[in-house]
Amino acid sequence: MGNNYSEAFIKAIYENPTVYHWCNYTSEFLTARGFQYLPERENWDGKIKRGGSYYTTRNGSSIVAFKIGSKWKLGDNGVGVIGCHIDALTAKIKPISKKAFKQGYRQLGVAPYSGGMSSVWWDRDLSIGGRVIVKSQDGSFSTKLAHVEHPIARIPTLAEHFGKPSEGPFNKETQMTPIIGHETTDEDNATDEEKKSPLYGRHDIKLLRAIAQNVGVSVSELYQLELELFDSQPGALGGLDREFMFCPRLDDKLCSFGAIQALVETSAPSDAINCVALFDNEEIGSLLRQGAKGGLFQHAIQRVFQQLGDFDDDYLRQTFANSFFISSDVTHAVNPNFSDSYLENHKPKLNTGLVVKLDPNGHTTSDGVSTAFIEEVARRTGNKLQYFHIRNDGVSGGTIGPMFSSATGIRSVDAGIPQLSMHSIRATTGSRDLELGVKMYSGFFNTWTSVDADFRKGDI
Image (cartoon, rainbow, N blue to C red; front, side):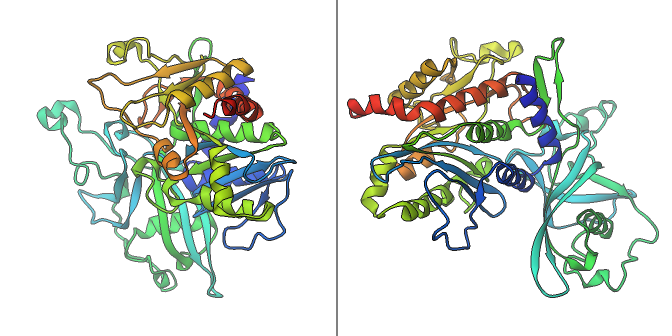
């Protein structure tokens, strides 16, 4: 089954390259499997019942999905949550991306999102996609997803023959501007109808035409763009025995894919709500409304509670105290060429099992109680765990775990799928790691309430 999950992920990540595509893909996946969509802007009265499966979204880039146990009781019972992020390092199209021709080249103004446009972005085949705001002739607004599959952009390196200028450091504003075509003599040949778009003059007319054609509207209907560049090369299984998966955008769509699979494939214990929360903007601090600090999980779950019982703040706090959260973001597998950079005895391997991430300075949310909890889940479900801790002379990355646990008070652990080359434009994980992730996530959903019952005896 391992390669089946991996091959399905490779297909999904190619067809859904941006956060907006991934959220839409996840929504359609859940709907096809019996989950009911609950729009945030609508009233949920009478739409939620025990034994049901539901999801809601925000901004088209974050999603919370949950299954409600048939005997779940507000206050006495809790919520088992797996949280991930679905944004990725990228290059975003600037509000005015049109640039003057330079040496006969047509170029595109882009800005790095988090650590995007690093050295690994040079000489890659880059496609473009994202969300388009459209204003129809009747005055109504809607969004459409754009995905131009063929590579339209490239950031060319300076050949080493030019000596020191080719060695860097490089200016991301002036020396990493993508080329998207050649200058042409009939440049400003926009029609009067095309000039009606408020985007005319802000973006290259050829780009506007390509996007309009891709989403099936006229240029004049384009009202706003949220586009980004991404690696167009499909993922692949590799290694002599196909034991690796080479793929773009693993961080953190890999864990999000596995968590959703597990939610769909398991049944919530009768006394639990099982939930997956996928957030945007983790790579830039999670501060926006669609990020982990935006409160989507809390708002959605409070509305669920209001439909299932006599809601008040005391019941909410009691329910959160009886809950458990896995912050699941990819983590570092040991790189054999740089093994000395890893802490001894904390060197996770591919195709082995989920990795518990620990950090004494609060960059992750794992503590003694939550680590013991997830270890007991693993023992009862036949899963193997690994451990990662940064060296004292290293710098630890962060996750959504600390901000989520501090906002809710829910006991929380950081545990994710291992990968090589984190934040590269293409990374590597094991071809069985997704299967192992689904197995662990499923084990959590199936057993967390029984594990918690034993922890509750000791008031922890």
